[in-house]
Length: 338
Image 1: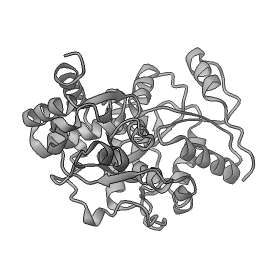
Image 2: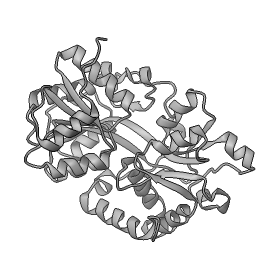
Image 3: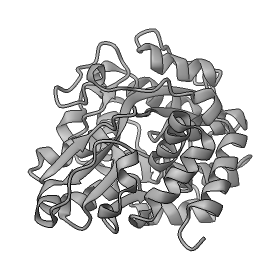
Image 4: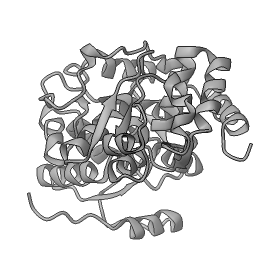
């Protein structure tokens, strides 16, 4: 693969804020892990000859940017991150149909396209889980958790790290999952009790598991494919699928309404939906489940057939009013300092 000519995040951020013209032909915000962002941008450039200017941002940050730039977008396509914010952007008319062929995609990926009127399409599936640092818990004589409710145990005081759902799609998926499992009022009581054991709410959804891997916290909540990557790297991380059941994300790709480089953006969508592109994930430790039915599923990917998955309601929890109401309640009842 030729050397990538990606614009730096700093330079791109400055250009976005000033409205400067880009030398690149396609402007992408990526809400996946940085290594995966870089690999896909490089592979796309190699295949198409189209230059890519890319910056990584969380889903919450990207949704805020897309809203702020409505009518005069500085980016063309949003790739990755949980599907709920993509659905919100679609419902608000901030994204547009790509017209891409979805016939090779698995049902859950096509479902995201159907719900959104083709404005966002599923690119991967990731299961929500809990990870713990086996060395830390053994050293402290703490029993590992097996269920969501276990995380309220006082033995985990100061041992749990999770992201803030206002900025992190991962954490919003956790919030919506617990609401769907326990009912809203009981869920917020549970989240408040878990919060008593949380040492930090991070900006990024993958940060807690990285902290657990490094021994900076005992327990994390996040997506299992991120945890698998860390465990394979040799960190003492063990993965738990909560006994009550768990939710999942369907990552999305969306073209921004008013994109200045629509044709190039459509080529990006078609590329990232292809079996060829999706099968490259394990090269950089991406172990989620690809949406293309012909893509290779990494053997390290979570075995969804053995996990108790809920029937995650994307239409409801990907709606603007639901998300805003749940986040407002989280800020009032769970956020530290309340």
